[in-house]
Structures are given as structure tokens and as C-alpha cells.
Length: 226
Ligand SMILES: Nc1ncnc2c1ncn2[C@@H]1O[C@H](COP(=O)(O)OP(=O)(O)O)[C@@H](O)[C@H]1O
Ligand SMILES: Nc1ccn([C@@H]2O[C@H](COP(=O)(O)OP(=O)(O)O)[C@@H](O)[C@H]2O)c(=O)n1
Image 1 (spheres, rainbow, N blue to C red):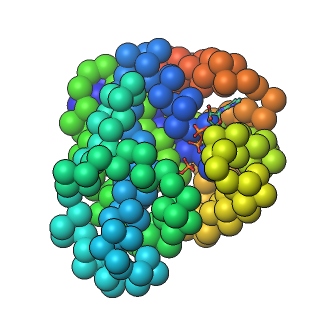
Image 2 (cartoon, helix red, strand yellow):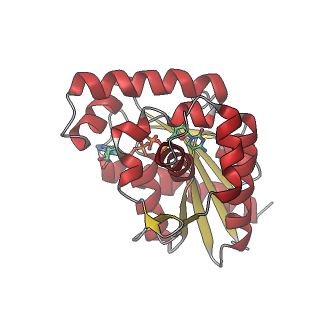
Image 3 (cartoon, rainbow, N blue to C red):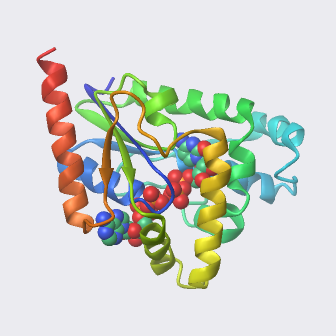
């Protein structure tokens, strides 16, 4: 079991994945991208020709959903069966349906079970877990709990700088609609009690990593002293 568990939530484009990976590397921790599980299930559903909004069919497919992910922050490989879907799950066709998958309560229970077993099995010294409901549902007792956010237009600009094949307008609209859909399922825009907010709107990448590491150091020092 990891000695230290760090939970980082936030909306799309806030920097969760890249900042969490960088923080995990700096701390020598493992890293769990929980969004990848929802994306991999969305990919799997599309691959099986199932309509993403047909929740009964999605649930019926879970039994054969053979998901695995590396928790090495330098090499987060995502597999569904023998298929390496690390890149495919980031495609817009997957991003556009993942919220429909993620809004099904039984899907959330299923993948949350996977996340908790991964956290329990993570070796010393620690693990950084990022997503939408880590600080509130998956690991509410984490040693450090952070809400990483940034102004919507900054998040849209960062995401569209990544997805160069899509127009900034399309990326922005998709990100906004996914935020809306997601926030109906999990409130990841307001920090729950005990969760520290880091707003990276005016911070560059390194400053954001430093800010997150400072919160982790402060929260884990407090925890160890009781
Ligand atoms: N504070 C920051 N300043 C500038 N770019 C950032 C910052 N944080 C993250 N990024 C960049 O923004 C993009 C989206 O970050 P990502 O980690 O994928 O966000 P999320 O996982 O929250 O959707 C990446 O290209 C990342 O390098
Ligand atoms: N813990 C989580 C993580 C992701 N998700 C869902 O999975 C989608 C993709 O998550 P992600 O973290 O890969 O998305 P980005 O914020 O990286 O764009 C989100 O839009 C949510 O619909 C969730 O519901 N709960």
C-alpha cells in the first residue's frame, strides 16, 4: 500500500494529467490517470459498435472489458485486452462520447473499484491519482487533496494547442460541453472541505508543478504530525 496518496481533481485542460505526472516523477511516486479508464471504456464501446448512450448495453459489455494501465508516470500505457489504446483514447471521437459513459452510476462503481485496488496495490512511497471525483469519492481520505483549475478560456487554449488537428472553436466547444456534462455527475469545480485549490490561470507549467508540490509537502507534513 502506498504510504502517501495524493488526489488531484479538476476540469479538462486544467493540467491534471501533465502536472500530476511531473509531480509524481519529482516525488518518485506512481501515477494513476483515472480518466483513461472512462476513455478506454468509451473506446471499447465504440469498437464493439455499441451506442454510448445505451447504458444497458454498456453495462452488459463490462464483463468482457479487459482494462489495464501502467502507473509509471514516465510510461502510462493503456491496454484493452491486447490492444494498446494509449493514443486512441485521446481522439476527439472518444472524447465526444466519454461523458455519456461516465454518467452511468454502475460504470462509476465498476471503475472506482479498479481505481481503489490499484491504489491499495501501489508500492512505497506513494501514488498521485488524478481525475474528477478522486478527492470526493475515490480517495476522500487521501493525504493531500487538490483541486487544480484554471480559467475556461485558458484551459481551452491549452487543450487546442495540443489538438492541432481540430479548430480552436471546435476544441473549445467540446471542452465546454464536456465540463457541463461532467459537472452534472460530479461537482469538480468547487473544492470540497479539506481540498486545496490551485488555480493555474496565471502560472506556467513549472510554477504549477511547484505549487502542487508545495501543497503536497504542507499537507503530508501536517498528516504525519497528526
Ligand atoms: N500551468 C500551465 N501552463 C501552461 N500549459 C500548461 C499548464 N498546465 C498544463 N499545461 C498544458 O496544457 C495541456 C493540457 O494539460 P493536461 O495535463 O492534459 O490537462 P488535463 O489532464 O487537466 O485535461 C498540456 O499540453 C499541458 O502541457
Ligand atoms: N475520475 C474521473 C475521471 C474522468 N471522468 C470522465 O472521463 C472523462 C475524461 O477524463 P480525462 O481526465 O481523461 O479528461 P481530461 O480532463 O484529461 O480532458 C471526463 O470528461 C469525465 O467524463 C470521470 O467521470 N471521473
